[in-house]
Image (cartoon, rainbow, N blue to C red):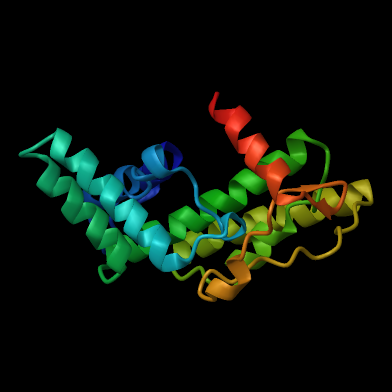
Length: 194
């Protein structure tokens, strides 16, 4: 959220965007994650459940700062609906931040191209020309570095579809690839709570 907010300082007024509103949206857009965590498609939670959890978290946060909470909730809802030019720009910044972070991890951990799923999941979703320019620069740097180091992409990771609840069925706890008998699972739960 902080990096996205800092990126709004790069707006020069020619974009037709309200810079302060973009900054506010960037600061608020993921605030619910401070309570519910970063829910990804791999968490086994549908989009509807995720939205409900985040909305409840935002309501709780906003109650703590009334009467100013109303403004924060308006910004959160504006971002979620994605109808204003500013909210669409900040959604682009959110995707940009994900790509930047993935590339930073690849460089830090010397595992170029390992986080391809983050690049795949955002492919073709950038809309604002300013953000597209930054994304293209990241792609160029990443490809150049990967080529220089002889990196090859790992096998493609299949990202679960959050719209299909059937893909979220969580298997029971397993040990060495085998399901545990029910009485062992119950004993594990009992020992965890004691």
